[in-house]
Length: 431
Image 1 (cartoon, rainbow, N blue to C red):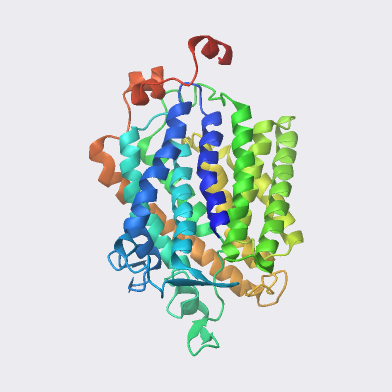
Image 2 (tube, helix red, strand yellow; image 1 turned 120 degrees about the vertical axis):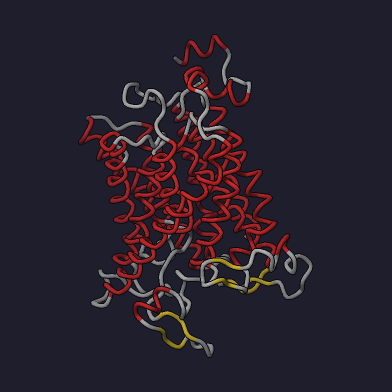
């Protein structure tokens, strides 16, 4: 579990490389700093009240747990009763803290790509702290902490299809929702927040008039490679042990990602006549996102189909920003939101029913029930995140969201960090 946590932590610097390469050369440092700044801020906030809000025992209406119950990891460190149960037995709760904090960090970092090149760094950090508190911690509690979107007999799924005996003297949802590693908690959450922010903050100065091209495709490819590597901690680690479910998640992650890359490249080739390196890297991320909620509940052949559709779907979705005029700078909405929704809903189609989940439509005549549950949790997550993101944006608004127009034109790196990524001679070559 500690190795898995370390792999997931690596994913945020990987996002920094991926987003940094996709940015223009005058913005690359700011883009990377938004990810690194998130690591610093969320890494502290999570240990203070994030763990307690996500996994505390004192739930508030199934929406979040009492942030003061385990504030500062009270009762978690040095407490012999602090054990987290997993598929392979018990391990110390502090190990679970290590694993879960990395999820919170990367979820916030993912949002930053949508608002690249135009936001004050200080306001971004303030937003990161407010948003993770209002949106991420509650959604983690709702899905993984026994709240509204969990298997709980008081959760949404139980309200829809009722409860059954859980075999341990309690009740559980008859058709439990599935989010193995973060389709709702991470990707729908981050993708919806990104969409709301780009609509509220507005477009970059030259959006629609200038082609914003990646300044370093090798950096993008490096970031994608590190994300794929780290994602095995994300998905296989979510089996909470070195067991068969972890092996299945590993194989499914590879299968879906490979198929998504091919799906994206094929869509590009048909639409544009070329298969690009940016498309390959983006297809990798689309596949990783889509398989995240389904990694432990589908057969590898289902993972291939799920991933291929995700790649083609996201290749088409990234063009929607030009059609509808919203400036999702680095395609967070087109990849994370679209693939996150698809992966969450697709469980209702591809779940085999043999991995502690109900079967999907392709495996049972009653599979429609799981499909209904998966659609319901996706819709609730979308609405909840949209509302919380608007509130977080409004709280941070007095700090000022946009940098000055002159600074945006000259480059956000110099204005916000007093640095440049490249020397003047190199800049000329990159241009």
